[in-house]
Image (cartoon, rainbow, N blue to C red):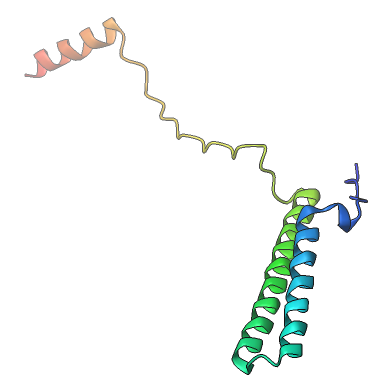
Length: 112
């Protein structure tokens, strides 16, 4: 049976909405910094922070997508525990019966 495809809109994802809100706020802050002629190190810090938040979001989404695609393909089966290794079995010969023991004792006594 083929796995079902998620048909939800990205706007239904809380994580996506939060990431887009943060990106819009960073862009507004950068624009406001340009308007106020903020110093270069402050602008550089704003751009680096904005870029790093976008990279973290995209990297996290890529990791989740890779994980889910492997799960859908059945490559990672988490529900079943791994099989236990087989223990080696050692078979012992049956113990001698009473008549065999008596014969050995009598042979030992005769020879000794």
